[in-house]
Structure formats: C-alpha cells, structure tokens
Image 1: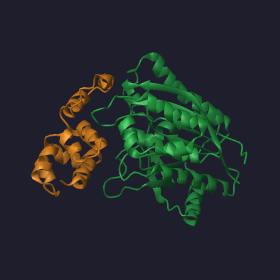
Image 2: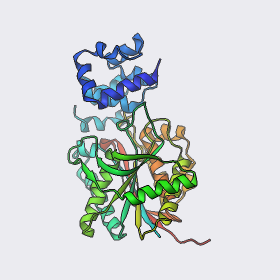
Image 3: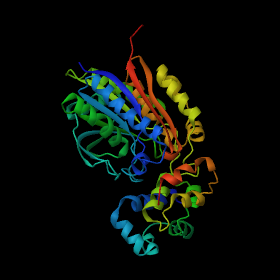
Image 4: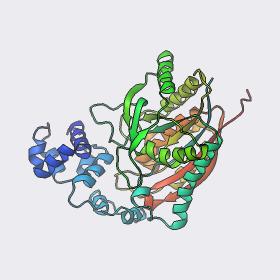
Length: 98
Length: 284
C-alpha cells in the first residue's frame, strides 16, 4: 500500500478543480497516471473511506474527498461506512446536511 | 522595544458557519458571544499587531511539501475554504515585524519556512473576522495580522515542545523589534474534536477542562506533557491543535489565564473553549 500516493491523489481531488472534473468524467482513467495498485484504485473509485483510513490515509482527506465527490455526500452515511454506531456522536449528522 | 501584551485561545469551528442553528439557542449565543467578548478584550489591550497561530487542514499544503511551521511575511488573503458568512479577501499584514521574526529566528536557531504570499484557511480567518475585525471597529483603525501556521492536522506533526519554542522565539523577536509594537497572540484551535473519523461528533469535556485549567494556571510544562497518543485517544485528531495553544502560551511572559467561555457542542462537533492569556509579573 502506498499511503503517500493515495494522499496525493485525494489531496488533488479535494483542492484542484480540473482534477475533480476529470475524476467525475472517468475515475479509472484519471487514476491511471498514478502509481496505484488495483486495491488502492478500487478503494478510491468505490469511496471506501474505511479502507483508505485503515491504509493510513488522513481522515481530513477521506472526509473532503467524500464531501467533494461522492454522489451520496451525506455525512451520516460516511460515518456508517466507517463503522460508526456511536449514538453519542449522532447530533452532528443533523447539523451537516448533505 | 516591542512587547507581547496578551493572548487568547479560541476555536475555529467551521460547522458554526455551515449549521449555525444546530445547537440550542443558549449554546449558540454563548459561543458567538464569546467571540464578541474576545474582540472587546482585544481592543482594550490597545494592540498594534496581532499574530494568529493556525494550522492547515490538508487544504493549503499537500504531500509534496508539509512544513512543520510557516510564517506569512508578505501578502495575505483568504480564507481558501468557502464558508457561508466568511468572506474571502485581503488581510493587512505587519510585514516589517514578520520579516524581523524570520531574521531573528535565523540568528537564534529557528529556521522559519516563509510564505511571501499566503492564502490562509479558516483557522486564521475565523478569529480574524470574528475578533480582529470587530476590534478594529472599536479602535477606529486597522489592526495588521501576521499568520503563523503549525503542523497540527497533517503528519509529520510539530511537537508540542517545538511549538512552545516557537512561542518563546516570537516573544524574543517582538521584544527586539525597533518599534513600540503592542502584540497580541491568538492560538486558534481545539479543543476536543474528531475530524473525518468514525467518532466525529464526540466531545471530550473532561479533556477540554484539563486544557482550560492549564491555560488558567499558565502551565506550559503541563500542556507540553501530553503525548500525541493520549491526545488522539482522548480528544481526537482535531485536539492536536493544542500545539497552537502551546505556542501562544509560551509567547506570554509569566502567563496566567481566564476562561471566557466553554461549551461542549456535539452538534458543532467540538468542545469550544475561549481563554484570555494575561501577562504576569516576574517574581524571580
């Protein structure tokens, strides 16, 4: 696993408008120019935020990536994908719509 | 010579702007009101310059360059991240003092990374727009701000002890500046919050109150004694921002503090603490 490359990709997808557009058009084509293996590519294409974090990717990037580019967007879904069942922390879901 | 005449610890919670009505009204008013109190207290210190110690949230700096500490010495604008009610625009810097801090650091073993043009993020802009701008209104004049950024959000993190070293160097640099500068330093961040993790929305009030007590007692050694493992476990990745508190506290001569407000606000995903740092007497 190359945490550095995955963070580089997600950072570009969080901050660079052209990168976001190319990813939206064809995620696999966009990712081809990076030294990612099949598993890493799949985690990004599938918005596998739990897998990305398990691989060491900074949570600020997984959250930004999710908010910027996931068609789901909803942060409650994001947290569920991370395995959260913490009712104590559910209040923010109502705060962060979308 | 210049002097650091006081400081603050304040939060920079973007969720306040995204979902202003999420908490109950009393809590919301307490937090927004605390910024107003800070502005009033800042103006009362009759400052000529403010240093705001913030941190990147993996927006400004990417894997290609991750500086441990940066100072903006030239043009400043921001915030880079768009938040409702937080306008993007130019920020007046105190370039002569910022440059002097760098030169002083060169001579004393603190090799600042320099941003000669710098677009800040919300960690600078929230205290700037909620505290410094209203203080300018009260003072009837502009109040230049120097941005200092410490690596709190992205590893490799700056250590707490190095953050304190920087605060001491900032004080020494201000005191060796050939001007009657009255500088206030704002440590922007914290306290407990989990950003982008499964625990996001949890608040650790016990940890937060420990940190506030350290500020009240001016206990820099106590603040710097936390390990990263303990901070992450007890208070989340966002609490690594207490590095900004350590820098601000170390910049104050014989500090002691006063809690202006504290609210644990799960709906805003953060324990929000406001402390004024006072300069104490040297009893040595």
